[in-house]
Image (cartoon, rainbow, N blue to C red; front, top):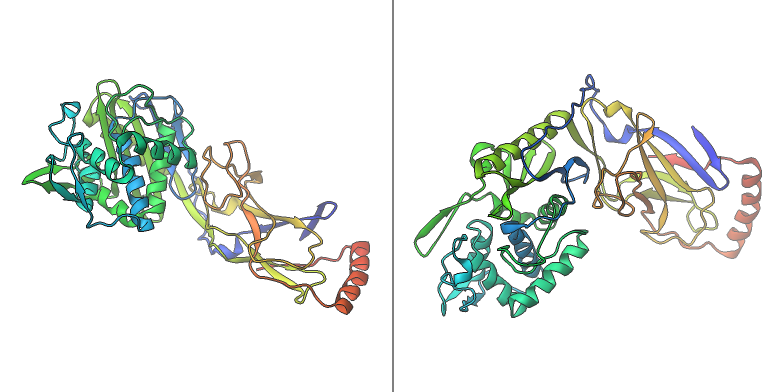
Length: 419
């Protein structure tokens, strides 16, 4: 059924027929999220970007070794670009030496000054052993100095939408003007999982040995919960105990961040509460694939009279369990679309509704399939784009279409087919 909402705009309300959702179960009552014994915490769906729980999410706190997530992200980026290679030999400076007094009391990989270490070993030293010495060695190898490397860290934080983070070193030991937030760390974890899935597997490894010294991953949830496969712990006296964890159950991946817990056991227990809550009361659905045709729309003055319209990115939503049947969509686009049309050209918006109300972005800027970033109060509206190219028709055909368009606008005949 077509509804003309305003001049030159058509709104089409459809149920998710292309998605083949299972029959709805009885809706589950969503209780208040658990209150945790920590300074700040968040729970984020990794695919949809919806923030399910947030407490003091934007409070700036010392990130401690969570900082190494950014160090490893930049390393993965350089490896992916081909600027670095896993078998590169990295010279160890006195700054990166395990005996550097700066590292006293912190976790280390135990690398030795004057020697050369394979880059992939240092990568494991950063991620699994949480080695502050390995982080400095990586920073110096990539940027020449740790100070220069922090410029890369802060630039990348800005690109990832980490609005309340600033890094002053590569390892996270106390430094002036170094801070981050639970929300920002969740966004960083999301980026690691999304952008470098092969390297992400390192975060699930439980131990790493170097120089005949075996060290265990400090993320206790890797032993306690088989669905957990990352990411990173952190501790300093000022920061308290922190943990960024991610888990996948069935087709849903959640990221839980706890900062400022009282102990190593407490950060694991509190993090587990978030994960249990999210998996119990929410589900994530993949509604449309990137490049999937959602509708066929009329093209005027074109060599072809129709073009397929779809989304550039996969579209995910996270909703309360038992609410699948309450999902609907609206296609919003200009009533008159004329050639030429290029592949990827924006033609309209896909508006998603739950129980008749706009489905919100979920308080996260990085929502898969979004037209653009935004806050929690903004509707989730992925862009609808042309999935093919339509060249302009010849003169005679354009004149004919101009005449037909006159009558179309006069009588308002529908020209859209839903796929």
